[in-house]
Image 1 (cartoon, rainbow, N blue to C red):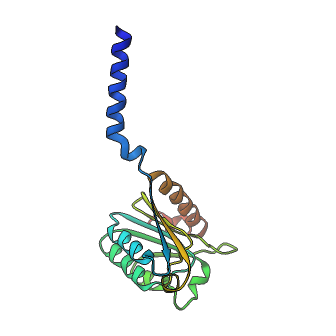
Image 2: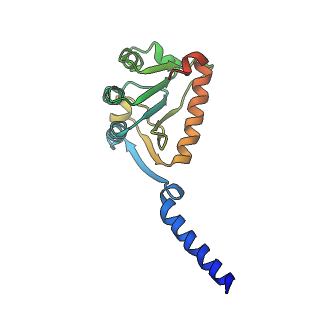
Length: 179
């Protein structure tokens, strides 16, 4: 009799646990977009506009003005925005790195050998934007590109660890503590 009561309690507890924590356990959702003109730019700007506390970006090439302005607006709302670009972007006249840094956004250029060929963004430590899609007008209008939007805390945590690792390689510790 006691064993049966314990089993019923355990079953009820398991049901309550699943109902309360389903979003944490089964939160993975993936959105898929393609370009040209497949909604990649629009979805990126929507997600940036919905950010509440943080946006971290590691981007090989970033020349898209609409996405840059969305980042500035997020920053002006109080969202922490950090951008890591490939080192070649420092001298590219179309790069949005200078545009963003002049508006107060933390921008750093990769100094390591080889390309910083990543293309990802982490929003509020729970959404990851990634894929072959560079943040350029050409990617939106002409190139065959793909974009994944992954809604998952665990995936975001892995990307965040990589972003912090890349920052550590490129920014002295005393500058990182204020970002």
